Image (cartoon, rainbow, N blue to C red; front, top):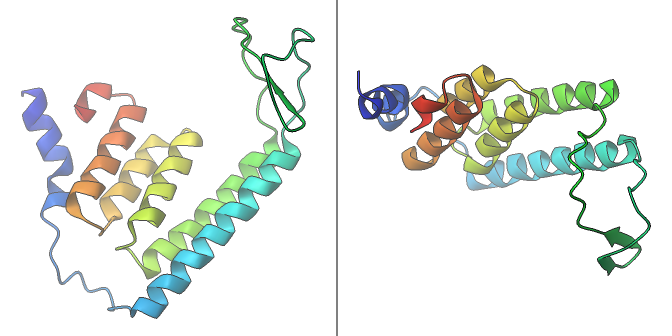
Length: 161
């Protein structure tokens, strides 16, 4: 099977979304409230993650660029970062549950769908990211792009093409 045909078969369910999906129509106010809740949940997760990230000593004492109190430098050392603390993974899982509930309430919100795919990929759960992309009911091209992103993060990168 050609790569193009394989990719089309992977995203066909997204392109053929029926307008009557059995989902209750939500009002613009509901939609705005759902998005606000999702953005608040993301902000809380990222704030906690930043607090919990381990501090790593720099390999030198120089600053190439200073922005406020932060020092940035070009370091050609390819030392991998330290492993993510278990607490961050637990917080991400809780956050993903919240995003899933909000996406179920408003599956047509492309931002919520994208955040689900992003954080599932970050959690190294590409199969779930692909499922989340397939649940997306935003613009078909947006949902297909999310599916391609999820496929690119999985074991069969060629399917994303």
